[in-house]
Image (tube, protein in one colour):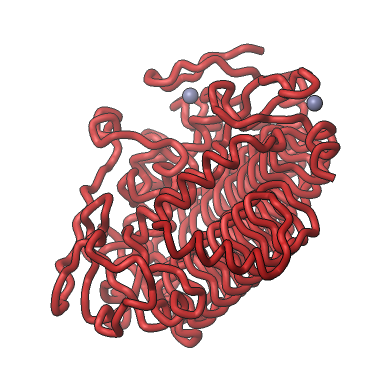
Length: 564
Ligand SMILES: [Zn+2]
Ligand SMILES: [Zn+2]
């Protein structure tokens, strides 16, 4: 069935296959033995993803007080948010109960209106993640857990001494990295696994001591090279002796600025073919950045997954459709974001984790089962709009509510964007579906202009006045603020950061951390597939490299033949 996206600004045609329909029926909720079918979507996959992501503010943190204890906390919600925000300890304490906010369903009014009224009464948890952030000296993190001495890392777990990064896992001493795991001493790296001491590298695995490498595997002491496997002392893909390598690399680094090197390497890399997509061991699957998956279609950033459709950033999951983040043993989840840790049977929800089961239209619930339209439960069962019912009452009421929502055209829709507590431009949606302020306001969504506090420092120095070599940077820089070259936003250097730059022998950054993040993310391919021909065998393929991009793109077979 070919449909047109219902969003008036989109109107993109999209297909719902017979297969999609059967799949959605298979994972639909069952109440009292009766399946309540999830209706086919009215919106295209992009608009669905955008809507889910607009509920996720990963990176914007605020200092404010906890509305329960009065202590100062770092929260994704600013002071003055229309709902109470509790510190992690306060939220998890027995000083309050989500059932206190319970209310009757009113069949004369739309459901979302009633849910939105409930949501501004129920206390919210300061951030998403584990409760030990303060103890672990990692207060400035979000959607993160088990991190030690880390600062401004997001969607990241099990790291130590890492900062200014996102989606990094099991790593140590890394700064300015995205999608990096099992690595140490890495700087400005993207999509690297099990690497050590790399700077400005992308799509590398098992590499050690390198600068400006692209798609290299098992290499050490290499620089400015692409598609190398198990090499040592290569510069510009040329095999050198150890002495020549050391001498020529030093000369190159001494006589060029970082910006020149970046541009030179980019031009150099265009002569080397790229693999059509970053997929490894993906059977019957389509999308990009996929590792070990079976029967996953139109998925991005997924791994250890079976039978997923239109999912992004989901690991260890099966039978899910339209889910954004994060997995760890989830099953039968649809139209939801931030669902994880053994949850199953979750539909139209946001941030429901820790063995939740059979939830519909719930937000920020933990260890909760059989609930509809609830918020802020730490353990709940048979509740609607936070009001407690018996099992029988619950099972009788749900079909009536669904019927009511069908009549108001709400059933099958995700939470309206007006329910997101965040300005659009501070959510992950802006990263993948960037809009201008005018476009956002035209759609009646929220926008907030960026404003930085003037830092209390000795002086603010424009980035272009900084010496290029780290050797010439005095300790005094810790008392200054730097004015970003691109955005003019001020930012500061921390002590552990300066130590890292000296250890890695890399220059002090000239761009604000947000701008660094934006540029790193721009190095990754978009969550979109195009038809394009393999540049070698001319086979047609679905690739995340748009046809007008300058890279040479090969199909899997041709790429492997070329590199190995
Ligand atoms: Zn659309
Ligand atoms: Zn080919």
